[in-house]
Image (cartoon, rainbow over all chains, first blue to last red; front, side, top):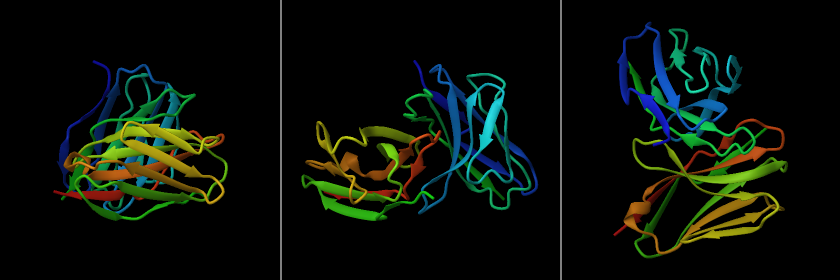
Length: 112
Length: 111
């Protein structure tokens, strides 16, 4: 059963702590993406990766970091430098040529 | 720069048609997409249209593209309560590696 999984669904952290959100896909997609969603706003791109061991900053990369050591996995770390980390985070993947993106179920991060 | 705009809210009665509108500013868009997001979930691709088309129909969904006015719409025929969700339009520009999303339109279907 192919798809994208994100875990956990809900995550709570104290202010000042780094936290890593997981994203895994078994669709054999080359490209993977991280978006942030806030109420009343569209999705904003944080980072994306088109190939293993390579990634590019999106529109709001400050305070975030990623890695792409395997094709299937694209974890996102929300660092303590991110000033307003509480949000819904969505991971997506696509075949590079078509860019039709498939989304995971999301992780809701709450920083207390 | 890119700017994709949508109205934030739309309410319709069950059985009526819904029309969700989207405007974009970049004329080099190649593909335009409609995604649906149910509460607390990820986005589900509903349909897409290539920029050299002006209409695409898929069961209850009709997408209209007016390239001159940079206006995209999604019509849902015979709207059901299960259609209540947030609908996002998104564009992919020539040479771009990612999508630019609108703010989303929250569709509420009244029984």
